[in-house]
Image (cartoon, rainbow, N blue to C red):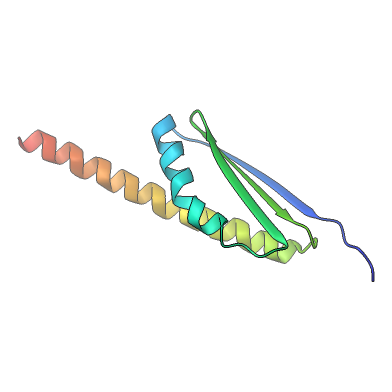
Length: 96
């Protein structure tokens, strides 16, 4: 059986605030825990940056690519949600 190399992807995203990076990281945590035995996803918020490490130990670039796409979709949805909450809070505070 031929042993394939592994695929390693590191994504670093910068946000305007540490709180945003931490909130986005928290939204990813449940998905990170559900990955396959051959796929490891770790994320951490470091200051205003979100670091995401994806390792596919079977070397399957297609699975790693799909994982990147899924994570980016989750991040975009979480960011939109945070932005909507912030907008609603700001408009509520103005009406008081």
